[in-house]
Image (cartoon, rainbow, N blue to C red; front, side, top):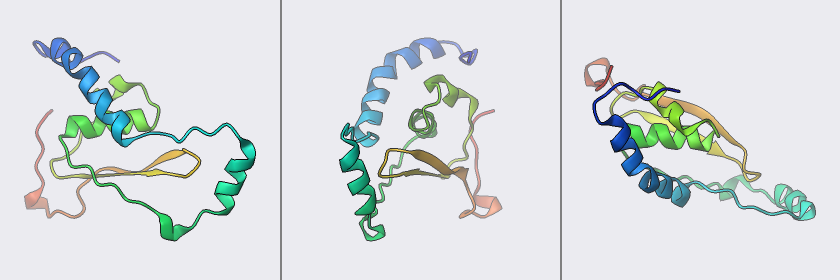
Length: 120
């Protein structure tokens, strides 16, 4: 994908890439286990009561980047998504590492008058 034609956008994106990727690695990771027997045991021991929920509050650009990386899309694809301010993005990461998106940029919790957007 082509980066937006914004003055100094390329330099800003490149300057912050390492920091953004470091943040992604901190919050999103797969527990790599090469032993198939352990994987089957982990699946059979899975308990819904052990679900964990992480809430990340951040700028829309970060959320879009995390969304793309978590779904193993090209990182540059975040430039093709738009989100409303105060929107909710919900990702599910299963015990086997499979990631799926429940929603992105949802503003159903806001009234129409509370919905704002900054961008194109």
